[in-house]
Image (cartoon, rainbow, N blue to C red; front, side, top):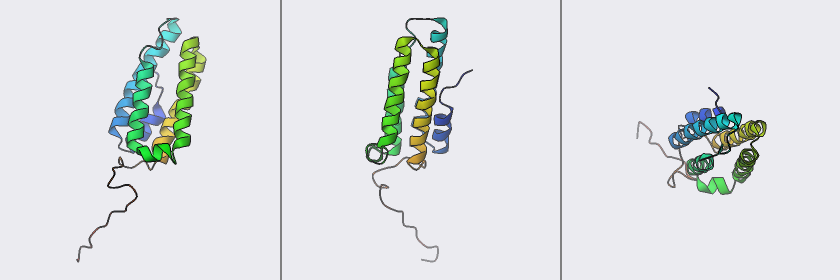
Length: 139
């Protein structure tokens, strides 16, 4: 079975990003269906994939933190958007080779965003910009 998002899935696992992992799995399955439809020459090869790609981007944005996604992570966000556009263009043209190539770029961009944002647990407003203080066992 082909997999289109191996790096994203692995990065999400490593980052304990459950929502990203769930969306990546669903997007990967939708990409596999599109790939099969492209190989079969079906006219409606991309049905539903655009929604899956958007949901994965949204889950990633929430995981890495909206502030990071639009500031330090803006280059990653632009790479994701560009790769998504390439996927949509390949589908519109029915070009399986370009579809596969675009998914490699998309997978790399998404995985990079998850890893470069810190990769740890999802950020919450309380944790942003602060370090946790711990009590000494002798205190």
